[in-house]
Image (cartoon, rainbow, N blue to C red; front, side, top):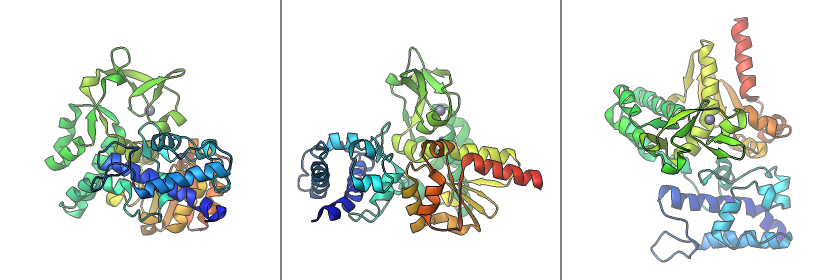
Length: 368
Ligand SMILES: [Zn+2]
């Protein structure tokens, strides 16, 4: 294989490796193992995994970089760092991937970008998110459609607003939900580990309600999106045994993007607009009449643009279509929105920051 053929493969091969390993740990519940896969056992590295690792090793050597591909745990650790930090090769820099992380460090789960980059490589078809919520969606499908849509929104909104919650809070909420749905909601939670207690209680973030941890200069919120846009503020929490937290898969897929979704949703509610959250079981994130809004927090505008260039998903159901990006991400990335528009290559989608979206609605309601 020529060097250029290899370099065009490294990103999808690496992203696919990350997704396969996450499937092993997240969906099947096994530990990631550095040993080879034994016949009939799904734990361990497959020949495909070994091939991807060898590819990374080769690219590192060719580019005069330390070999990052020889050991799976080391390689996965590096994947939680921005690609430009450890795999500075032309394929990464030319595609705007320097700031992209394939794994979210806090929970060890692939980022949305990793899934996008792995698409079409090595027969990966069903998304991790889809697999993770499969049982919940199957349960919802047993109810009349309209009810199922309502239950979906109620459960997801509750989770997004309560990354950490007193165990007893469920009994109050369950009144409005069928018992099976209430039980499914509870299964998205697990006990808070004792180690989350600082001094005598688990400190809770004033902005998003998640638990906080010790950072270099004091307490920091465990939600990355929250730390990026708010200054740290805590309120007294509770003892760890009284609390439950959402499980790590849910944190990555619902909590992280949820912070900005809820901020936008609450602002529109405040303006008295007919706004829907996660309508039709997540066709889009937010809808206001014939306007559909998808909120996406990809660090690379090029990766996000390619995604919408390929497929606009649920936005196709709406006459007006907005792609909204958190302010903190746009201000951290040079020319984010321009790069996004270029990579998207389509003029039926409007790209805005969350504040621009709120401003846009404010001026409309003022003019109405
Ligand atoms: Zn927070």
